[in-house]
Length: 294
Image 1 (spheres, rainbow, N blue to C red):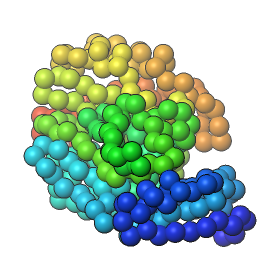
Image 2 (image 1 turned 180 degrees about the vertical axis):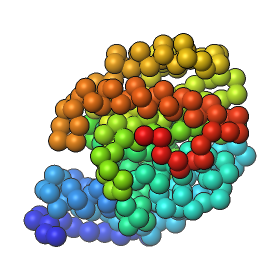
Image 3 (image 1 turned 135 degrees about the horizontal axis):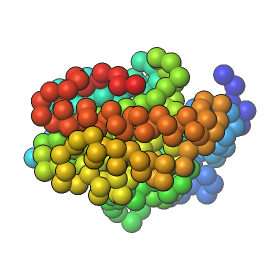
Image 4 (image 1 turned 90 degrees about the vertical axis):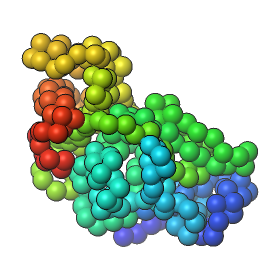
C-alpha cells in the first residue's frame, strides 16, 4: 500500500493533550482510532491531512460498562469487543448482531463503533442501530464537554456534528426492556458494505424505532413509520401500512452494488421481516440474535 502524501503524526498520552494538539494544529488534522476507514482514505488520496493524531493510548476510551440503566461505550471499543462482551449480549444484543455483520474478522478487531459513525458514510452499520436506540454522543474540546443526541449527529455525507477541535470520548445508550433486529442486505456472505440496512427496536408498550442505512445520504430514522406503528400490536394490516411508506421515506441511489429500485424493494422486505423478528424477540421467541433474515 502506498500513501502518496506526507503528514505529521502524534500519539498523545492523555485526552487533554489530544485536545491541545487538535486546537494548536494550523492545518487539517485527522484522529486515528482503529484507522480502517482513515488508512483507506489516505491510500486513495481521498483525504490529505497535515496531521494524524493517534488516540489509542488515551486512557478511559476503551471503557465498556453499565451504569444503572445506561450503557457506556468508549470511543476505542471495537466491533469485536461488542461481539465478545457478556454485558452487551445480556443487555443490548442488537449491538452484537450489528457488529457481527461488519466487514471481516480482521477489520472488526480494529474498527471502532465510534469511528464508524464519525466516518458517517451512508452504509455505516452502526448508524441505523444507534438511531433506533436512545443514543447520546459525548465529546470533549477546548471549551469543555458537550453531548449530541444521535438524531442530530449525521449532517450529510461524511459530515457530523463534531467540530474539528473535538474528540468523541464515548457513547451512552439508555436501556430498557426491548427487542431489536439489524437486517443487512449484502451481495454475498462475508465482507461487504450494506446495499441496504434496517435497524429496529421495539419496547413493551408497542413503541417502535425504525432506522435505515445505505438508502439515503446519511443513516436515517423514520418518525412517520414509527408513528403509524405506535401503540399497535403487529398484524398483517399494520405491517403492510408501514411497508407501504418505505418508498416515501428513503432516497437510494443506483451504483455498482445495487440499483435504486432493488434497494427500495429489498428495504420493504427487510422492514417486514425485521418488525416480526423484533417483536418476537421482545416476547422471548423469534430467531436468535445473529440469525440472518435476508
